[in-house]
Image: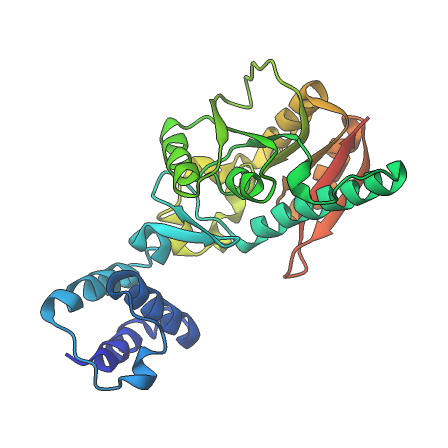
Length: 299
């Protein structure tokens, strides 16, 4: 069958479920993944014919897409800040908003280094490579936050905590595949025991209330791990309270706490940090204009 005919089948079969641009993305991601073909191949080889063997994984992927299974789970991989990460049913698929949280941390580290160098007027490089930090990612899942920070802050000591052993297995594999060192901790933030202190703590904990579930797409509610997504309606900030208490104990004075948050609970989460005596609290919007990130400084 001609490759362009398979593209047409993708559109015919998926057109009632997804926008045309998203179907194009699915198709090109599949041929890149399974056939190692660049997306411009149809432009230069419109008559390209596939063997039955080459067609099979494309049609298998199509069948799963019709059931709204996320493409990342079908392919077993997701992209995050120029990194390739393994994902499966045990971990959430990394989101662009989480990339923004990581970028905020990196920008702040660079800015602080520049300020330190200017104050000292000594021969101090302003490269993030030359500053050692202790960083913890709470609820690491696939490891996306911890691995990205370890990649772009190569002299930092990065730790990652999760209550799920299966998630930690995925995160460890991702760290190895991306050639970074991350120390993994199997613990619950609701009952932590550590003998470490950190300069930066970051977290993207569960924060979706049960009442918000009906607003979510089937590809999320049917396939992504609910324990990493949902919290009770009557205790929606349970993990943020635990993280704030943890940070007061394990975050060094002047250290920074960065959180991805529920966009509908921005002011409530901000107040929670105030009540835990954090200072310089900043609520920041994501690329879509939603309040999704929060930073506080430990007094």
